[in-house]
Image 1 (cartoon, rainbow, N blue to C red):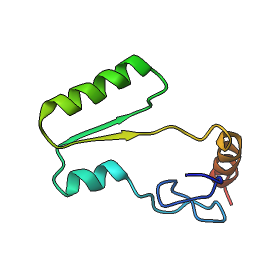
Image 2: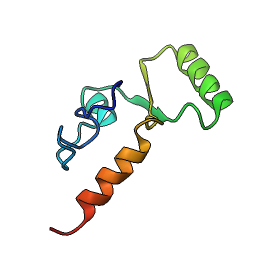
Image 3: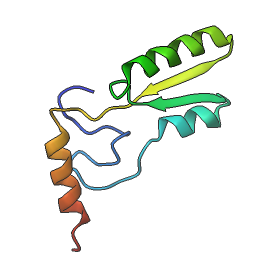
Length: 88
């Protein structure tokens, strides 16, 4: 996502309060995709490249979810989490 906006996958409303979270891998598995891979492609680029090759060579339906926090939004996200985790 761009613009640092909240979306269903963040688990926060537009005013940054906690809410339900859309978990993409759970939805994929619920519709029958068996081979779901969740990874941060920047941690080990060679491993990510290998995963892509393995998935392409498998001949099966594969889903790769490349998940990484936005570097621009990371500080703001920590702030929202800290505020929301404090008792009311």
